[in-house]
Length: 131
Image 1 (cartoon, helix red, strand yellow):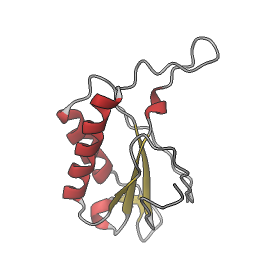
Image 2: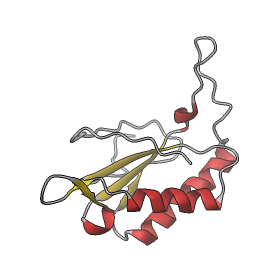
Image 3: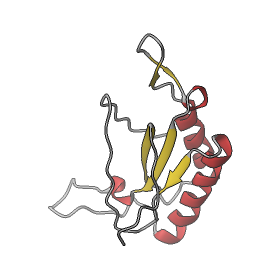
Image 4: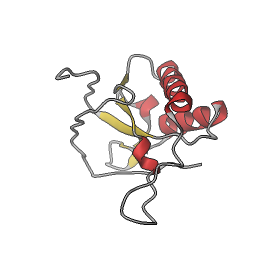
């Protein structure tokens, strides 16, 4: 609606999708993995620092289309994505876990909303995290 709902400075943009069988243990693993990843440059320019060692922030965006299956036909199938009644509580809990881990440094988009997301991809580094 023309208003910013989440904004960060230096940090990570997380595009997050959930599967129907994801549960609390998946969320804990995801949050721990994200917070613990050593992907920020140290004094020597090496990817060696994590969120805990930096003041980096997180912008978390729900993105069910990550589960789009394009193997057949021309229209993606999203049958492997969790339906909203499953995904919304997972998304909300994931945000809570992250906010407990790095207080004051987690912003989010609005679940299910059409959003324009702008980012500067410094590096570029793009990772896919799957368990």
